[in-house]
Image (cartoon, rainbow, N blue to C red; front, side, top):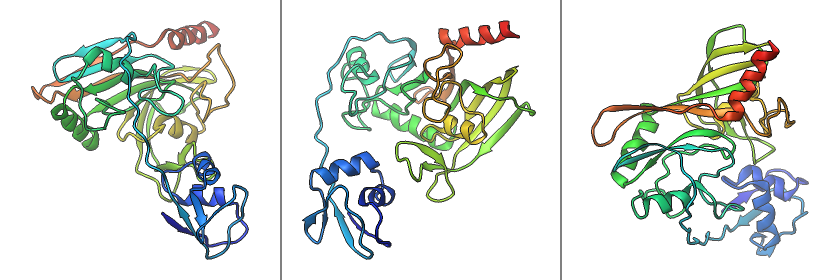
Length: 301
């Protein structure tokens, strides 16, 4: 890709990370180190500053597919038939292999459990994966066991008939009992590893919330996703100044209430079965640390 610098004196890695779609600043820095960013045919140094009007050429090498091994890992299966699998994902499990997580993922476990019976629409690295939840988020995730089911479920995600309900514990109190956050989400303008509510280059994001219980400085919420943007509930709650307790990215980053990670759980999932046309609703209980935290807050009164 070719990118034209409008201003002089800006760090090249910052300029490219902002302007190059899909590239984080760390990814840009790796490309600079490996000579994949050139100016007038000459590799650009990592600490170089931009020249106004200069055309920077960025080459992103093709990602080499690696073979993903099937691994016998425990799976909490909530629903399964010939077309669909619903998993209650534990905390600390990554959904699909990526840099730094080549094994121990949900995909590794699915390959062992399902063998060749997984949809291939998302490619070799994400067989069967219709949607994702964060590594530190627990709860329900739906998997397609064939391409027919995958296409039907993906369409339901698109038209919002696949309904996902989460529970979370957030900071602060709410005067209202329910509400809706409608605020576009896109890549954070300065920290490319984060998402944020943005006015430019954001995608529509809508979260409906309601209060389950109030605990002084904390509130237990139920959130229903109308859209499914990356980190949507976490970003929207932080936008309301009610970040999720234990969120290391959008919250304080401090351990609190005995928690080591965020209090966010995908508790219910409703979809129209791609084969039968019947509506299916599955639920799963809160994980132990989330439930124990609520009991602690109740005792604190």
